[in-house]
Image (tube, rainbow, N blue to C red):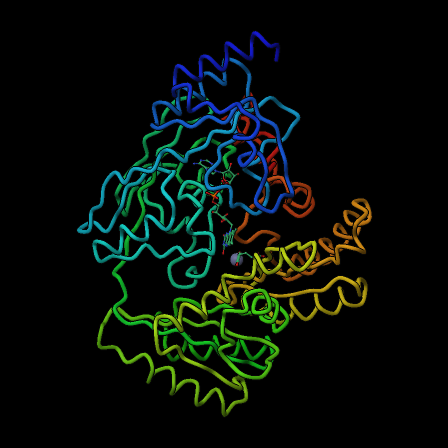
Length: 475
Ligand code: FAD
Ligand code: 2HG
Ligand code: ZN
């Protein structure tokens, strides 16, 4: 881009969103050009912060005219470098962070309509204010945006009961790569009027359009809840416990998460203020939440009965149930502390595998055997959403041994291949909830069915023929 083209392009953007919302100063651009793990760094002509859908549309049209690509960015908490520009193509980062309006709350219809830049935590709070629940729950909920959650089809800890983001979105408003505004902000539960563009945009990671608004489902707010941390002797026992609790407590199970002992120790070592809720060591821990819409539900009794039988069967060895909100919060802080703990421990690479729930023990045991045999200096930790068959294999490479980037990259590729091949042999997926972004593009090409890849490419070419929307990501 020549200097004069660049200047006239930037002036056009300033006309649309106001000069102060076109950030070009290197220091101010910095936080938008590097991901939070500092693994990806990109360049951009500017960070552009529109305030309305109309402004987003005008920005996209200006980019079209100038042949500049658009990289949508929400809270920049993504796991795969999807919100960071790749340097090959002149780009802007389009940040949704000024679009934080709650447009409508409709408790009778159980919906909320919001701007895409609203923080997930903000939406949870507004829902609670009208005695409703917005159930999506992630460790990053104080920083990630709902548009980012939709664009990545985020998962988190409540999927077992409420589904992924895809299940929680009724309507979407988006600016398409052409610059047209698609108003799909329906509040309907049922609408079979042809192909559903909404479902194409969910999980599209900014490659098919900029999500500017969403209609979300709300749920009754549970009036009783219980959190328990349960020690189990093996991953097989964790699965047996899930099966038993499903039979005994059904839909009351909202969260059923697992963590290996080494991961549990790692989190607690990094947060000395957090009490260790159970004495002794257990190979695996289960983080359980039960909820009920009735204030009078006796969740304690239900759980105690189930656990008593589970103790007898040898699938549970110890358990603690939180008796205060603080105790419950401290238990969940351990669960949500994994990502930061892993970053501190070395060069951490987390996988995001899904396998059928029944195959999780097989998956974990095979990964454990293979990696310890072939890469004895790489430590493997596990955390995940057992109820969804989604286990994060976290491989931590000692910084000193892997200081040479080529050695790291080569070993990482081999470790990835081990995890992905075992996952594939069990009918699994290489990305359950984090997406593809730039980190997993090659792996996607290796593991996705060619017909499905062709179909994705055709859709992308049809909606974005000049490839201006987040190029170099996903496919
Ligand atoms: P960003 O990182 O800004 O962007 C992610 C992708 O979406 C990019 O490709 C970007 O281009 C695109 N995008 C963003 N906004 C828009 C928009 N408005 N329109 C179109 N495209 C857009 N993820 C899980 O699924 N489950 C977890 O349990 C989980 N836990 C986490 C815990 C921690 C501590 C952290 C740091 C992250 C965690 N994540 C988890 C990952 C991350 O928070 C999610 O992927 C989240 O949905 C990303 O939202 P964001 O607003 O930060 O998006
Ligand atoms: C989680 O389940 C997130 O906590 C992040 O998906 C997992 O950091 C990770 O590997
Ligand atoms: Zn996860």
